[in-house]
Length: 262
Image (tube, rainbow, N blue to C red; front, side, top):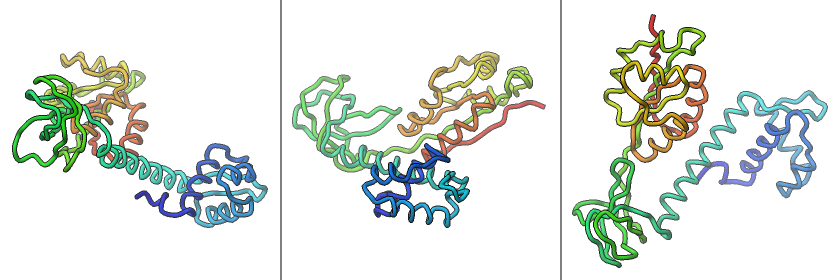
């Protein structure tokens, strides 16, 4: 369980930090107290703790700001909550809900089948030796979508990896300053390639590779990794910090390669 959820104190500290970050430097303690269901005096004590811990600063006149350390703690806690929510949704609620898979053979209602993830898709079949299984909720033919309930075991899934290839913005050369040989090497072994920025698109076209994803490449990289798919994202340099923050907050594996040529 997320540490934020393990005690009222940690939960309150988290929520107060969120409120300070959202409304700094003018925080109305009375409104925060009402939303958290505690007294203004309690909010005041929590804020004193946050100041003492170096997560919040104050000018002494009821004006508060979140510190760099406070932002980091908030991001870590939010990422922890997100991971916990994903476990609840994917590993706990799944046992009382219905999943959709692709039938690899004709299946009958009530039949217990094996489940495995390949290429980011869930498949139902009658293979032996597979840990995960579920019960078919309605008869289907091979190749059709099938509803699966009563999931048991763990679906084997190796988390995908994201390769980030950084290219310079147009002001400092754009695609003309890209190591095309290195780029061609990276995309030659990639199942899926996304791009962020016209400079990245132009560089990809110079090596004869049209990207699979142009719009929403950041979201694609995250979702693909969660489904066990690795990808190469070619991005203009100014988009890299935001993408790194997203990947790190999700706890995903990545490698950053600078393709700027000398």
